[in-house]
Image (cartoon, rainbow, N blue to C red; front, side, top):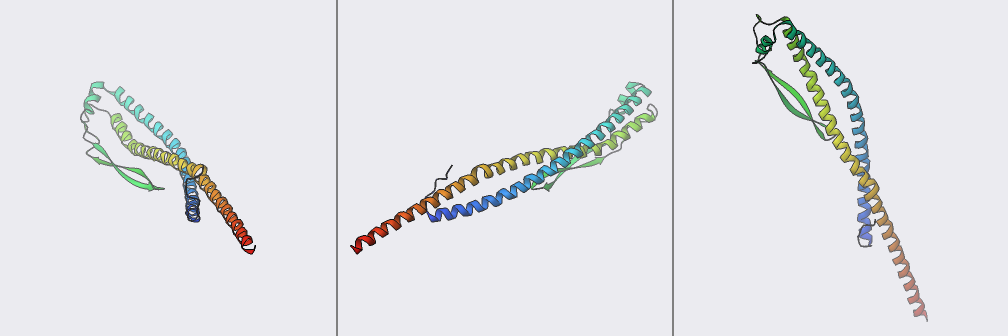
Amino acid sequence: MRIQVPATRMAMMKLKRRLAMARRGHKLLKDKQEELLRRILGLVAGIREHREKVERETGRVLARFALARSSFRPEYLDEAVFLPTKSVAVEVETRNILNVKVPVFKKAISGRLRCYGLATTSGELDLALFALDSLLDSLLELAEKEKTLELLAVELEKTRRRVNALEFVLIPDIEETVKHIALKLAEDERGALTRLMRVKELIRK
């Protein structure tokens, strides 16, 4: 669809500059789209492996807690972990990937892991809590990767829409308009030349 502009040389020059800029922008966005896709595919493979690892570790932690629960009375276990003395806070920083701000999770730990006496508990509870503590890093890393993947996927979709808008709408519209103006100017020049030749012929007569 042609852009509604006057059929003048000035308008055609402006459109040609706009067309060159649109083509450069299209190339840059296309390169960004390809790089985003490459990063996303790499993240997907990494997340799949990491999630399997976290699920295996979680299974081991739950098995240790089940073993700890079976080794002494359940009310003793509930009493032992009722008031934890260790707290974990997550600090969120950001970094840029292809102009997309993605999170970096860091844990801030305070307090002691063991918050119970040794008289009514077994060593299995200690092992279960240490396993749970070591699982935290893997969970944070998985959450960071998955959030990064989500943000990059959103940016990829935005970039894809912009590339398509330039490739299939704006650039063809500008090219069609430039071609129309060029034909109109050529037609006007031919008309002016024909009128000039007629005037000369009349003068000679």
